[in-house]
Image (tube, rainbow, N blue to C red):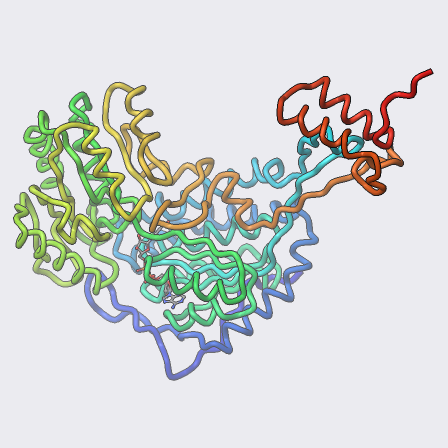
Length: 525
Ligand code: NAD
């Protein structure tokens, strides 16, 4: 086994990513954009490494992956600083929502993967007498992972690790918006000393991602926008290969009249503005029951006006927008809302200083025809909708093309769980926001336009596996009841059929016994 896990791809010299600081606007670095040939070469290296990695077995793979934890322990804080340089997010966020989130997943996999991926028995119906049934999992092969810029470390590394555990090898294409973190990820796997080709990191833009979708991979795992997700799925359909899509959201927060409104107000501020609102599970629609609306909104405003905006060195709560063009979406959504009658309660404009800073913004009088209600904003804006009661909130929350995450706020836990159950989304929280995505035991993913598939939890490990069914005949019966010859067996099959569907055990057993005797009744003496 060699010490190199990720080989830098040969750059196409003419095309580079120019990385600018979202905090100061200064140019930081250039990175090569990998060509289609670079991508094919990386996939070929991952293909060559596949059988060796698969055949190491789960125990050995988990031992090797434990070195990723060791590297994170040693270099995690240094990595967090690099992620903050890349994104402008607070160091605390880089450490907790990027590095710690991966560490939690590593621990979950180490403890749970042996059971989740183990061969298991399944029930065998009585008509298959003398047989037993098994379910087992085997890796898909080479997995292509394409990641976004908002959590560039976590959303790249987490699917890579989950794929590796099961015995797949991986080619990762990080976002061109955050290439510094792409290099951090490359360093992580290189330092962990994975066998050559097991993880390939290819820097590049959309063209590199598109090339990866066309390359000889066995599965695509994509996190990003709906528009790109469609292209990834279309490319996967040509082969066809399985595809998992983790897409956008327009998450609802429903505040009932009996909520603990002080806690809910803090949650609304954090849920909408953490990571500058660039979280797929940010609160993007706040529904408040009219009896507490004004009081609650005032509490939220106090929280929001206390948020410190600034760069990582300013000890701020909220950093800049990571991707400059996203500022245009934010300003367009706000302008459209104002034109259609929304009121700006606080914020509403780009902050006048270097970098991509936007004031945390609260909008009231939001209505469903506004763009900010229908489309994902992915920025520091909290649209607030007054509702008659929680039933109206639930109806509006569900009447949307997205279904990623949502939260319900009430001190009646039973009612909270019941409302959470009725929400059309991949995950819901009661009296909490965002945090459920950090629990590696919980499957994560969306419904409707928010995506297809789940990662994290048992589903998240099995997503990267093929399922194989094995049925074994133990050799007890030489005379298979349903095999040839058929002559004379029909009445016994019909008796079995009626007994089974009518749930009449003696009738069913009688039919089965007759079949085992070749369709004949017990001989009369
Ligand atoms: P994006 O779709 O613009 O880009 C995502 C990745 O796709 C990048 O690496 C990009 O280079 C690549 N890409 C671009 N064109 C491609 C193509 N034709 N073929 C293949 N790959 C291509 O998304 P983004 O702006 O980086 O991320 C923001 C979006 O991601 C938001 O909608 C957000 O909600 C979503 N997101 C979802 C989750 C989730 O878990 N559901 C998590 C984070 C972000």
